[in-house]
Image 1: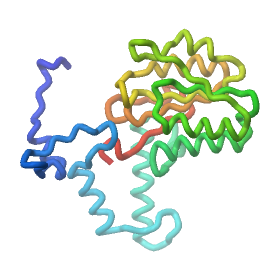
Image 2 (image 1 turned 90 degrees about the vertical axis):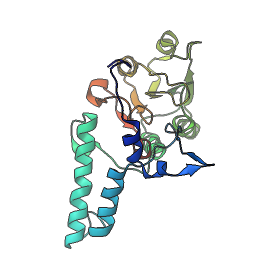
Image 3 (image 1 turned 30 degrees about the vertical axis):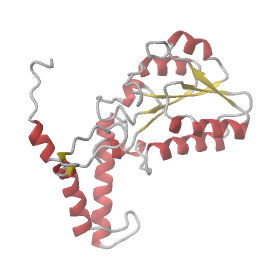
Image 4 (image 1 turned 180 degrees about the vertical axis):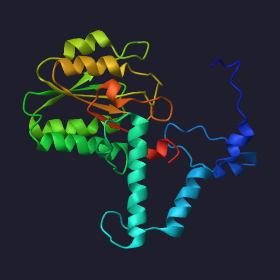
Length: 235
C-alpha cells in the first residue's frame, strides 16, 4: 500500500494507548522509543485485568477450577503464537522472561549438550545487539570456541561475501538479528539460514525488532530458534 492510499486515524490509535493521554511539559505525549519498548493498548490491559480479577492461579500444577482456567488460557496463548509464527507444533513455543533470556537459554543448552566445543566457531554480525553477542562470548570462553563477527558494508548491510567465507565445517552456530535495532536493516535471513544449514550449523534469529513489523514464518526461514520479546509487540 502506498503512502498516498494509506489512511490512519491517528487520534483513534492514540486513544487505544492510555499512556498517551497524559501531557509532558504541557504538551501531549509523543512516544518514539518503540524499538526499546512498546506501550500496552487498552485491549491487552483488559485481558490482563480479566486474568487477575477472575482466574489468577498457578498453571499446570493445580486441580482446582481457577488453575484449570489459567492453564487453558496459557496454552491458548501458546497456540496463537505458534500460528502467528508458522511453527510446526505448539510445543515448539517456549515462554521465557524475554528475548535476552531466550538467547541465553539456547546458548547454555547448546554448550551443556556438547554441541559446541574447542576450535568451533560462532558467527554473529556487527549489526547485532549485545543480547545476541555476550551469551555467545560467554559460551565460547567456557568451551574454547571462537566468536567471529560478520562484517557490515558501508550501506549498513550484511557483507554476504564475507559471511560465506567465514562459514565452514567448524561453524556450529550462526546468531543474527532479523532487523537491526540501530539501523533498521532487514537482514536476508532466508539466505543466511540456507547457507548456514549447508555447513550443518544451528541458526538463531533475534526477532525482537521484526516481530512487530513483519509476517514471520519460521518454517519458511528454516531457522532452529526464533527469539523475541512480548514487550516490543504491545505485550
